[in-house]
Length: 431
Image (tube, rainbow, N blue to C red; front, top):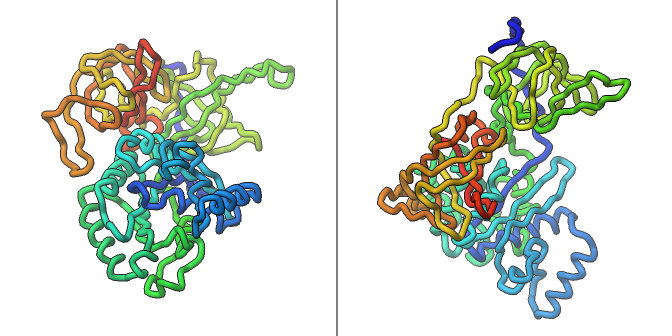
């Protein structure tokens, strides 16, 4: 099904610039100091307004606390402030002269696993806190597994509360060795260890005088310089269409642009593309941005692409290259995290929504439920309830095109929606 046959130009793969924005998530057990760490980052990097500091100081005086409670900067819910815990995901933005940051502060409780999954789904890096007094705990393993499941390639283990163990190098080395033995089962690609005291600020923004034996960078110095370009797949070109631009003005009377973000790979002007699901092909006429036209665009740029042919393309369609086609199937194997209070129904019917559209589906099989505290697969327990992670098989009404989540996070993710209540019941990753 082709309109015209064109010869594709052979253009070398471009190299994207160093990312100026870093998205990272914090995780750890309850009371490991996640919110305090983020508060310290904001406080020491001068990213707090005067009225926020005044409110925190008044809270400290009212409660008679010795130190300023920096966790209040992220714990915004009343229940969080009362209990001193994080319940929902809190997002915070701050910047240094070197880089901009978006932080997702995720809960530590087991019952809020689904919150960590949503908070970490867009992260390039995970900061996992470990209490120096307690060492590696079940939640450390749980959060590390979720990070690897979500294809977060960079993990920083912050061994916190070093002030409570007299800044002991022996404690630091022991926890470091314990985690390394666990990480072998998780296939973590890049691990870094930093001993800190979030309460006092040691090795958070400024290097600690209390730990001269640590020769590495402070946390903020590490975050400012870490390269996360390896999270962008430049091999598999994918351009989901989000909007069709038709100005219908005198200047752009015949303009028909397909707007969206390139989720992976790159596209060149005068290059052949294939449109899914129609299977028609055409050539790229122009790649337009607010700042002008481009010869080459790559992930994660947002652009408007025009074609030489007038093809029926709408939101939910996707432009790919003929030599790099995605999978197309009605039978899908998926790892899911169940969000809803009502358990998963085997043979139950749901709506499956991907980046390129949606279709109705049925749960055909539950392969296993993951015990992410022991990293074992339980094939006997098929009862999937809220916060459980499991591998399932899905049969869709219509064929869907997708990639493995390990290849492309954007075209390899999905959500399941209850047909009756319209609630999002699960998030999934294509295998």
